[in-house]
Amino acid sequence: MAVHGSRGVTRRSVLLGVLLPVTRYLPIQPGGDAGPKEVASWLRELLPDAGAAALGAHYLRAFPGERSAEQLAQELFGCCLSDEADRPGIERLMHRVRDSRARDFRDDNLVLLDGWAVPRTEARLLALVAISAAR
Image 1 (cartoon, rainbow, N blue to C red):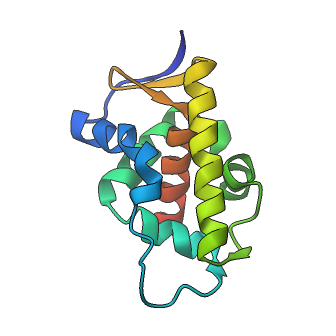
Image 2 (cartoon, rainbow, N blue to C red):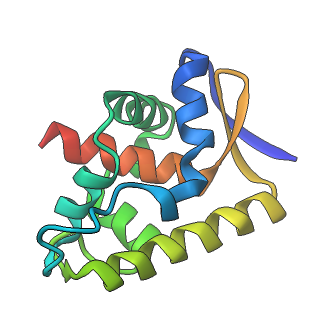
């Protein structure tokens, strides 16, 4: 298993990251405005928890070469954060994230965060949350 990273994140924060694969269950509000929004706006709604941003910030400290929000968005979603997506579009992006996460497990593409092996896709998604929260 190829695991990269460092220590210093609470187990609670890591559990948040490990639970991330349930993105299909994250709160894309069933009612309300489901019209097109920027991908960055959807991202802030999907993962508003400060723990997600804290874990993402830890990943960014461990991998400073991945501090570009646009690069992370391209890696994760294949689009820019400023691109607009409607609810079905966001669901397609989350499906892409789930597929990438599964590939990470299959290919042993994991990072070590406080002793926990986390798929790189999850770590990158949390890093993007951290960058978006700081804006």
